[in-house]
Length: 162
Image 1: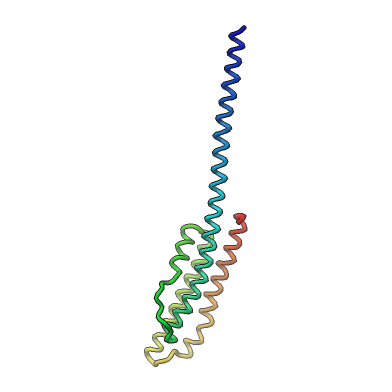
Image 2: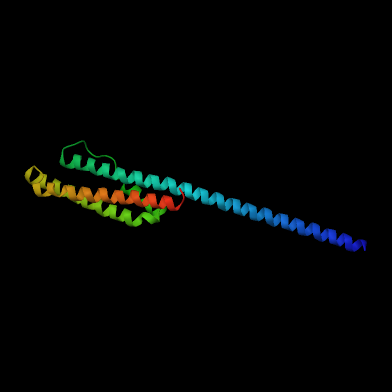
């Protein structure tokens, strides 16, 4: 009888120990999952803010490009922030790829407009009226693309609970 009682105690002890180990393991796993999710949200929040900030910097950079190339302003020495925008979208925020692609297209059109103005100045020492008339459309395309990025970033942040 004493052996049965001892066997029962060992069985209960072993079952309790196994349950405690499994509980600790599952608790640790859950803790690290929650921590990982929080860190992912924090990283996404940071990258969304950086991407939107850099998108607005693109617009400022294009204004400086226009000034440097067409209005005899100071030379433009810094590179376009578009590379940074593209990198963030590819690596961290794939949900904004379509909007960033539209911004890329608008930036290329703006740069082509600037080059047309440079060609006009080379040929006649002034930018043609036809080229100047295209400015509002190319500028609007850039601004609309940036607004789309900012709006979609706000939606993505809301979905992530940021």
